[in-house]
Length: 85
Length: 206
Image (tube, rainbow over all chains, first blue to last red; front, top):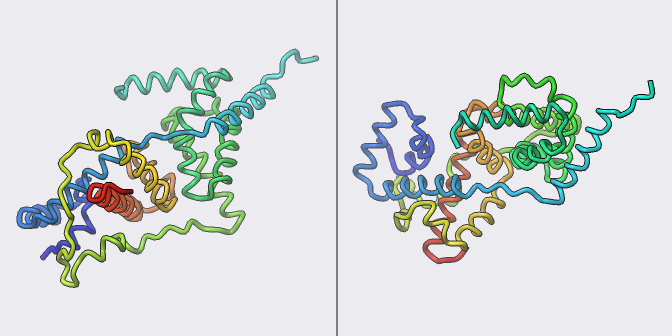
């Protein structure tokens, strides 16, 4: 029988629909009977969504500027102007 | 933005990159560098990661003309970073030290009885949506803090998984991990955030 700890182990797979049918059914059965695990799954799903909504990816402006300069230099080398030949 | 428009925008950007347009590179740097740093950080420390990503952009200046567009630009860039990072590790005779052994976070695991039932069940059920929760600036800051404290391997896996629209195969390829190990990294990271949100909602403290 699926215990609460077992459910916690496979909770991500359940949320992502990665479980085989039999395991998925065991989880659903367990959730019907166990309010603690219903809370756990609900809160974990919320954590996933929270991270999704929050995943702002900031870039250090000084580093971005350094990249711009290095790239400009490489571009200039790649396109030599006024070939003496 | 829908996927078709995204692809059209990307095709336009690639044309401008191929033409050696400096402004196009500045745009691309701002769009793609955070993801590229995440790839590099999976393999190495912060300052080496910045060097690897810089080196990658310089490679791209010459190589963009050969880019055939079979993968998305993002995937192509991520693969270049991963290859450079793996080469560096090989030269330094180092390996990525990710922990795949424990699926449960120890802090969560302690909350179960030996018989596998909850000893300390979740303290309440979150009813608010993620967006509503994030309106609380303090929670948002707390999330930042906890994300920055995650092990690099977990954080990179999480970020790339989202960046690649949750396509595990892409991420496994870039990070050189099996599908089951990727799932461990993601699940561990999510449990940490679960524990953080619970603590925050209960005490209002980070």
